[in-house]
Length: 472
Image (tube, rainbow, N blue to C red):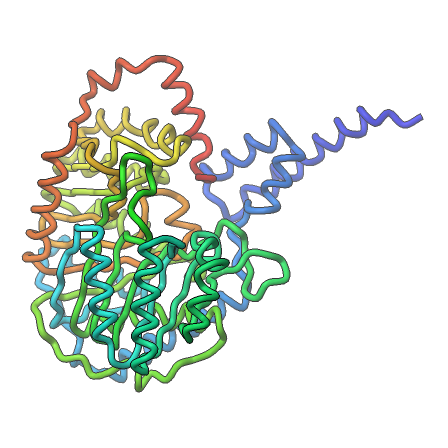
């Protein structure tokens, strides 16, 4: 008679031993520990979870497409010659950032741009609709969340009006983040001749399918190749968190830098449809109309490097005076944590702005587990009170600004496709500084003494949640 209990026990140990060898391959020690702990505690459930989303699997075809897109970006910039390129005047410690960003994301710095920072949620949507209503040739939208709500319908109505004027409207929505809109609103949009595609569809038999938690987290818009928008805001109503609506930051860009956002959209459009659109129509001659130098940095699994993480870590190490980080989620990997501690310890003023209220309980527990070592290093933690602050930006020495869609967590660094914009302009840095000062004024500064008073149970829950940093 077979002793099934013994068979199961042996199988559990086989799973543990095999995964002990397999999991650490080409993976950070922190991520390996997280998965191995899960698998050693629950071998078969852990194995199943690992099979589903343990590896950052991207189809080989998509990696090849990303390499091709990178080659095309470099080729297009070479054809432009020196006209759009500009070399920002930076301190010696910050100058290498330009080269690093270029090698990571393929885009060089483009001058002659005008940049506007949009902080009013509904005002930013109104501005986008106005730009769509003035479009003459095309409108391109790429968003993680396109809501099946009043805001989503308002933008869809503007797109429908544009189509009637002969404007080509193309919309890319993430298959998971925009699932309700794809099932309900998208059919009506397509009936109005708006082109709508789902990014990274989920399912083993779907075109371009990948791991269900590999998402397109980008938020960008391009109108006529002349106007570009990027940042943290989705096309949806702001009430993601009950009683605490989202507060965002978007940048509106006019000038040659818009063409870099256009290239990011076209690469994703090509990934999902296999169609290449005519560059002569979508990359118009864009005259310089401002003083800002911008440089777009896309990131995602297709690059095979953690572009945003590498750039941010380098920015932290190069800072000499002040760093201000605003993020809705702060669950950093070890290199980022070391870099932010190092900045504070060597005398750089480091301000971290996070929301006092969160919309993800486990993530909030994990995030707060880092506060001890941040406070000990001298990082100032500002807990923003009025709304859920979903904005994502970073400023270095009041000189370099980074605004985009990347959260300070392993998911954004390694799993999501993101887009960020580097801005080399003291005026933009000053404008962002004014916004940051408002954050400080409406925040509660967390002290080490207050933080030490939390209960042992709270400490335990936070430290347990931190063990899942690679899964959040």
